[in-house]
Image 1 (cartoon, rainbow, N blue to C red):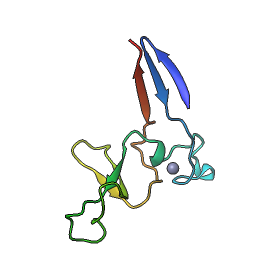
Image 2: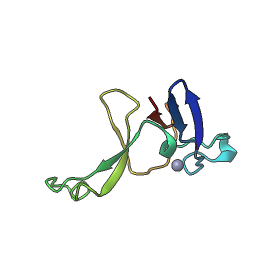
Image 3: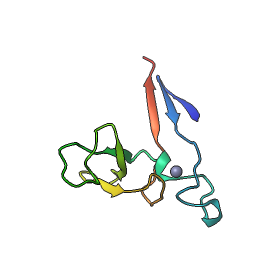
Length: 96
Ligand SMILES: [Zn+2]
């Protein structure tokens, strides 16, 4: 974790390195991965779905999505990966 003070807000950058989606030996010197990207969302199933791959409780993770493109979620089976849209996940805490 890396904490930055930006005016009245504390910004915490999720800088936990991961090399599961893009290996260090392949040029990933900073540990960028889908799992530490702000565009990644968890996808859960729903009991009303007919397909067994998507039929589950809503607390069960069935995959991972990339929301880098507005209005679109790209579905992934794996949590770890890499693309040119990577941007570090940021958590902002308002101290006002
Ligand atoms: Zn990862």
